[in-house]
Image (cartoon, rainbow, N blue to C red; front, side, top):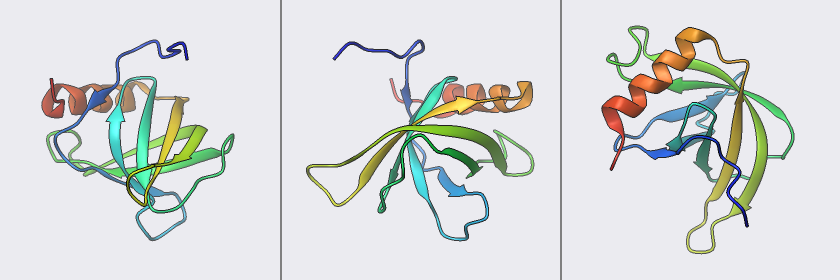
Length: 113
C-alpha cells in the first residue's frame, strides 16, 4: 500500500492518555503523532469516519494547563493481531496555532529516533 502521509509520524517515549470529549474513561493513548495525524491504541474499536474531539493529557513542558484539546477524524481502526488492542488512525482537523505548537513540542521533547 502506498504511503499517504505527508509528514513523518513520531513514536513518543512517554505515554500520553487521550480521552474522548464527554467520556470519563481513557479512550486510548498515543502511539505516534505528526502535525497531520496520530495513531491511538485502545481496548475498544472506534467507528471510522466520525469526528472525535479529544483531550490529551500532556506534561507541563508541553502545556502549562496539562492538556491538549484537538479534533480528529477517524480514518481507520483495526485489531492488533498480537495483543487485544485496537489501532485507530486519526487525521487532525481544524488545528489552532497553539495546538500545532504543542504537538511540535511533544515531538521535539519526546520522540524516539
